[in-house]
Length: 213
Image (tube, rainbow, N blue to C red; front, side, top):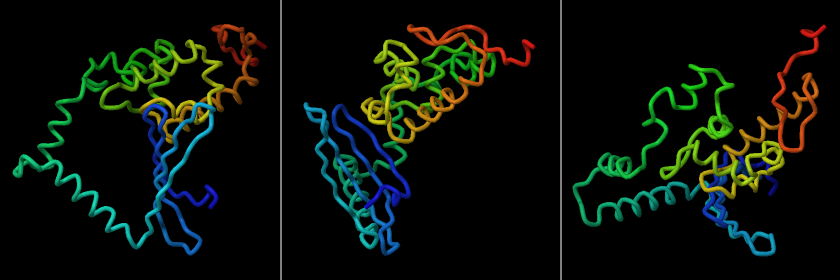
């Protein structure tokens, strides 16, 4: 089936392994879930394996997963509640952006001091939105920028698959970045700027032509 039958999608990556969870519409207008694992191969190709759950089996799938995790969680502690388990997970997480001083958080920093004070990693982190339990969005953004040597032009050349290779990056987060990059490309011809240098984007002031007239 074509991708236009995907109603919702989530994805995540772990090293060379990429996972896609798609909620799809079948030709008979019923729904089904497709879970795909795609492994990167040394020759650049991908090996994919998929499993499908049809609409009439959703309740069985959800019930089975719920029972599985509940059994594992309660193996040794029968009186532990879901709230207790969640609290323990939170305690195990490293301090995230929300634990930072307000003036250091990307969104608050932009509102307080202006967007020109933001680092590239902080701006990219705002597009990413959230990190992982082990890494903040700013740290994740920093890793992505490091992969292109901090060069924004090279960053704009990355494709969906390139971003999704980073743990914590899925289709939704990547699409936000790609959309912002595309808007920047479309905006550039409309601005009165010095041509882009080989080592990155010019830092010359962006002055609309009518102001100079």
